[in-house]
Length: 152
Image 1 (spheres, rainbow, N blue to C red):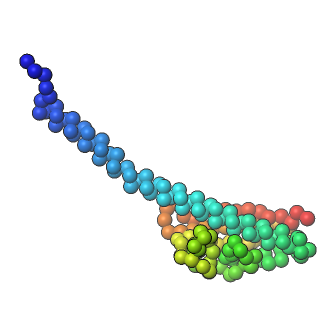
Image 2: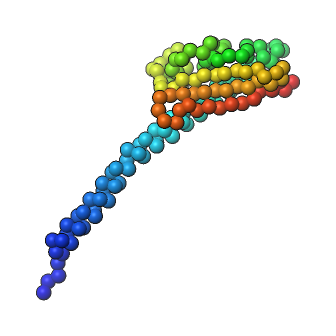
């Protein structure tokens, strides 16, 4: 008597294998979605950090030039880019990415990211900086706050 698989056993094995394959492939869209959200939040965190650094640079330049530490840092909403120390009034426009992969407002292709820098002078020695990076999609907006002090 030869031992072999019956038709029922073969159908059950194929069904179990099919369920496993479908389960694996159905998880791919979620993995791609999570990857996209993580990438967007990482880029937003770097853009927010850059905004804070530029504002700190303006404050530090004021010290070096022996100006009031709040020169060019008045209350309001602004945009600015990495190669400038000029705050421009906030406009709801997207950042662009240049051919050398730098984010700015003047050169390159539009991205999905918008950055708003809010300056609130709390008193003569304290200023609150809020950087909001927003985009269409899950995980938006990314907000960073920092307090700057007149440390001199």
